[in-house]
Amino acid sequence: MGMTIAEKILAAKSGNKTVVPGDVVTVDVDTVILFDNNFMPTNWREIIKVADPSKIVVTFDHRVPAPTQQAAAAQVTGRAFVKQFGIKRFHDVGHNQGISHQLVADYGYALPGSVLLCSDSHTCSAGVFNCLARGVGGPDIIYAAIKGQTWFRCGETVRYELVGKLPEAVTAKDAFLQIAGVHGEHATMNVEYGGSGVAGLSINARKTLSAMSAELSAEFATFEADAALVEWISARNPAPFVPVRPDADAKYHAVRKVDLSALEPLVALPDSVVRNSYPVSKAAGTRIDQAYIGSCANGTQDDIELAARVVKGRRVAAGVRFIVIPASQTVYRDVVASGAVQVLLEAGAMIAPPTCGACGGGHMGVLGPNEVCLTSSTRNFKGRMGDPSSQVYMASPATVAASALTGVITDPREFMQ
Amino acid sequence: MSTGQAMNFKGRVWIVGDNINTDLILPNKAFYLTHEEQALYVFSANRPGWAEQVKKGDILIGGSNFGMGSSRAAARSLKNLGLSCLIAESLNGLFMRNCVNFAFPALECPGIHAAFTEGEEAEVEFERAQVCNVTHGTALSGKPLPAPLMALVQAGGVYQLLEKEGLIAPKV
Image (cartoon, rainbow over all chains, first blue to last red):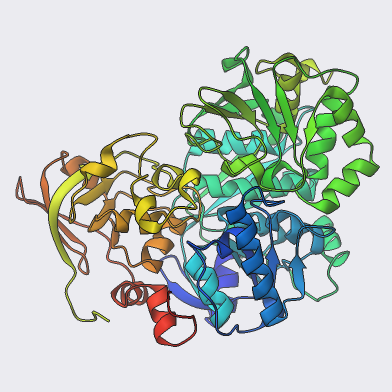
């Protein structure tokens, strides 16, 4: 019987001929990523041995540079771990640092057909690289670092067939909001993205969709590989790989078409993205205190350059804090070189160093009582970015940038004619 | 450890809705506190004062997609709060992993949300995924945890296992 991309990789990695929904399999893990939160005293358990130090990546991303003594202490523990086991792929605060999921893209850490784990829920981001990547728990990461294996429960797969081309000022974030708004959560299921529309999306744009699939509660998010993807990886990682295609007779829970050309800028209202998306007009005029662009989902060069295009020659509205966070030092250097940072600074944006920052309510733009934020980051849960009484709306970087200029939630097409 | 010992629970139920997220269970501001202190922040944003009312052995009933969101140890907080188990329409996959990791019994049981009113009494046979509304005498069948995962729960979770094998240092 035919298999989806996720099923094929699960089968190959578990040594089974086929895997079907419901199966629980043990698989070899190719890449294990640890980050600063793993090393917090409440989370960390001292590891006595690791299976293979060359399969481990360590970065500090959630709280960087350390905003508190506790965060600093976690980094001290992390550096000791790196030293003890001779971890080569270590992204300490400095030249090579970044949000783990962005580093996977920057350095080509995820090869098609491979298995990658990290105990950040947005690890499905790496599924853009035609591999099996998922967020797991802290204990899963310690187990995988030690044993070189993990278990997966195979779920059914929903296939999203992307067709058409996104209109001006409409982004992959809007495509995600459309899917989450119409189809809601996908708990226990995988999502697989394919179709003729994929070719028109940059790798960064595809990565927005794969990262945001965590918000669908997807188990795995996978993309088909095309020439652009193969080229991206080959330029960053010399290791050989074979792309994994779904079988023609793969069995899906559902196949759903998304016409990218028919989309418009959308916004998710506060507290959830599950069946909570509307055209921007629904929330237009809502006053905001903060506009936020960043995170593993929308801190790429594309996102920051898009924001720069919107605000070029204009000023951020009085009373609005416009915070822009490149997702990695590589991205930061690229957007400085392209001139986007200069444009944003002149408009009045604050550029913060690469970090998850306020996306998880950690630092760099945490919200106070009753404040309103429009964000292009990953989550808008109640209290996610700060005080429980604060409200977080979610939209694309274009919509966030346009709203930063007006001080109210604004359709970006007004600024992108 | 407790292999062979039946995991049966009987207790008063609390009920929450669909899409309960991890940040409501374990908010960021509690990250640096002790595990015991973290437990008192469960639902502090959406149901202030609730954590203090929970008694040891109470059972939590949730809707669909329970535990959506982050990889944080939200399941550990529910366990430390004294809840004996969680039964939901469906569980987020990452959250379910953490339930297994921390040996917190959690079951998927379609129909559970409508079968109970808060304050009623439930009886749960975890291994067989059987749930009974003691108050009304009605019964439901859930989805038993796959055998390897059940074994992990019965072993006391991932850290117990690794500690026993000498692969992580004992908790100081």
